[in-house]
Length: 203
Length: 201
Image (cartoon, rainbow over all chains, first blue to last red; front, side, top):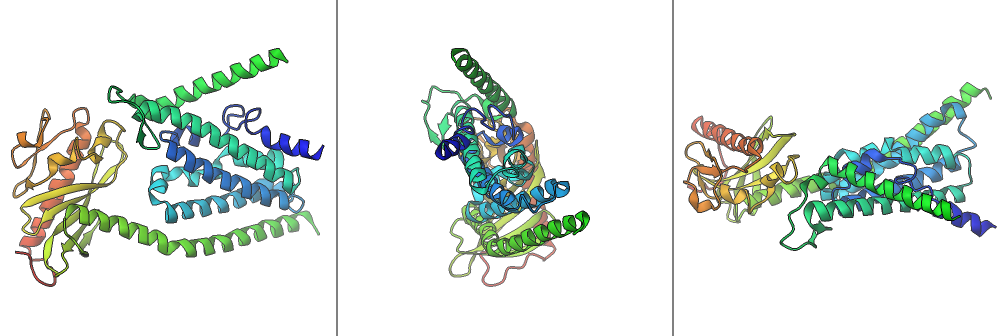
């Protein structure tokens, strides 16, 4: 039974409750930074770091924090981890930090993190909260990878900066601009919904 | 313990805890971040004033800095001007490399820009833009060539190329370059451009 819950806590973040395609959380950063795969990876890892550690702390303090001040407390905890992630990126990976621009500090208001804090970490044990955060993180990273890979291949003809399309290929510049983000995300969500519906019918 | 008392205690201790944590993280990373910025500027100076082994900040005002690039013997090789102009989206910040006599532009280096990808953002691309700004005669102001030409040889010594479809970005770069040249020339005629050590000319 125990292993089954652990597995479920993790797996639901990948597809069934995927933060991007199913819960539609954290759309702002998802749309903004997925113009290149490297940005998607960096953003995914930064969000994962914040999500996992704030879930851990929030779950640890869940019985101490009075519910009247819970949101304020969560935000302070989340903001601390975000600032740490931002500083570390600026110190160790200056080019990535530059291309992500203001979107790293903006993780503070990313709904995935506050959403999981409120819906899961504040009600469950530390172990389950961390597993849940891990699952959500992997789900978020996967969604960003798919989105940014499509946009980078079509928009620049490259993947991780390496050319994958031949010389005949004229990059669709719109794909790395904001409209490309909306179009790709819309199609992906439609696909996810379609797959989910088919699955339900079969069941 | 009353509820409001508990709320104050909890929030204060969380605040203090994160404050303490952030101070130590800031302390740990501060030097590294400053070093990264320094390195970026130095690499850019070496790129626009070839052969530079040491650079020195000569003059600074708002949005305009002059660096002198020197070789190992301390001879002045040229100047790197950190300047900016309003682009299509945001400020374009660039480094203009000129020779010691202020007569020739070596090359440009774009430090920061947020122009439209695929159009204005081509100002960072050497093949399609920056190569048209290399080894230019800058005794007078530079002029934009419209419509653009295909190869640098088709331009006169004081002409530079436009990016078709991104006139605003091209003009911003031009105004930044011409503005910074004017400033450094004025400083020279006023006798305020003093380089320590041996002079290149």
